[in-house]
Image (tube, rainbow, N blue to C red; front, side, top):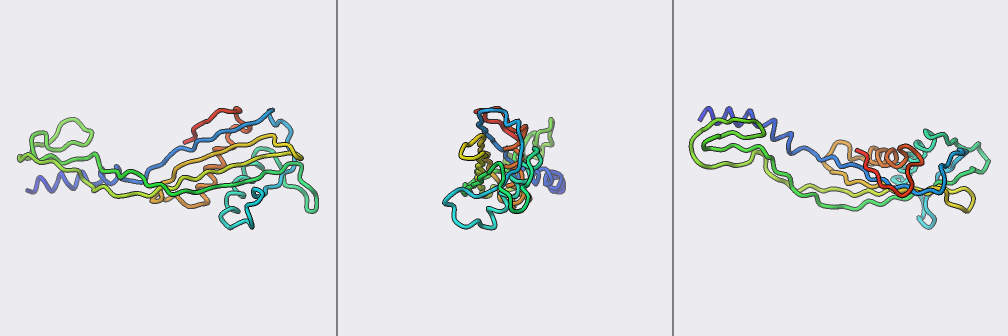
Length: 199
């Protein structure tokens, strides 16, 4: 009995790791007609008809503005019109994640302990069971859309989306917005029409 307890304790950390929060990549797609070589002043605005900007919108707008400034655009001087307008929109949709049970198992029979390592310890009997029970996880699909225009003409637009495990420590709106914006503006302006995956 004592040997069974020791094996269980040794396997517990592995089970905890196996059932930790999942991290999903960001998929980003960009479209443009030229390389957007000329930079200038830019103002970030919500999509038309979106109503008054919410606090959550401001989180995504700030992330987009930070990436634009990082890519050579500048803020307009007070009282002056910006050369470029970047319209920002986002959506968030709940999606259940499939439960994850631990792949670590205790076998009470020949080759007793298995967890990705060769070998095992036979403890007699003939029953095996996984460590760490499965539990339902809730995810959120977040999509960020940005359109950059100069005058009436759109010169660049892109969309980025990712699935977030709400049990993850980095599931807050600030971190998600920053991840999506960083992926969307990675290697700006990006290859037109191509979807890239950013981990």
